[in-house]
Image (cartoon, rainbow, N blue to C red; front, side, top):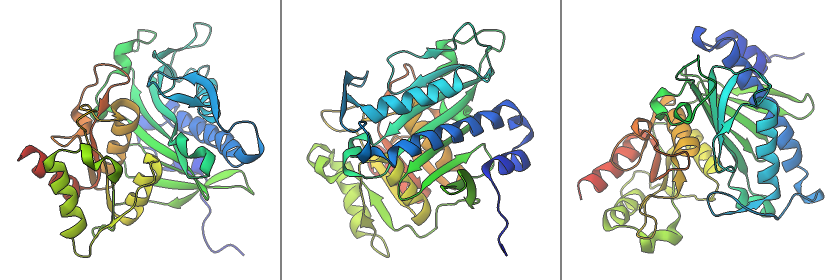
Length: 329
């Protein structure tokens, strides 16, 4: 006999969404859960299918697209372009914003997403993920515009990520806490596994790419020295190069993820709209904080859809210490 209440993601969304999120937003989140199931089914079989390696294309970031990148992007778009819930989309893999085809009804929301973050890890079977953010359309009378996509993270109504690892997890927030669901492969359903996630008060990890240390500023080096030597207990360094996996580990165990600016990357590497802002939204909902080193990531209004930014996200005190080193320098 089952002693634990089983809560599916559909039931949780129906029971707990705030009033403003009921209806299309709830359905949109469930559509993203379906996309996660489809993408997860392929990531689990990646070594058996012809989806490893490169797709002979270069995306707008100047990065070679991997076959699973293209597949994941296609799945998210195809599952969402016809539902009548969206007025536009933005994907890391596409140069321009994505209008809803004229033959389909226009909706009230904007979806921004990175279909497969950390995809350089695919060939080595390391966790990868999908990141997404959702905004309301600025003008419901219009069909969808670039302006609808270029909103600051503070105006986001929901955000989340899907982690494809030893298990597949969907973690999201619609402004009332952060909740995690784990895909049961036997049932084919996401079940509530982590309700009301908060950053632990005592962090364990910091996640920075030390291979880039030679290109960091002096205050940045001082901050990482402080992280590695001034904490009680001492923080351990953990870095996978998959932002979703690094963020998720630090969310569960406490810590900070960072990708600062470098002398050859003055604007940083992480994309603001569909990577940094959604994770910063989740961080604040979990009691943490996301910053570009000078102020909140959520207060930055993007000027173009693929804008980059330095990133520090995690336990609030650790991120605010980064600001103290950088702004005070």
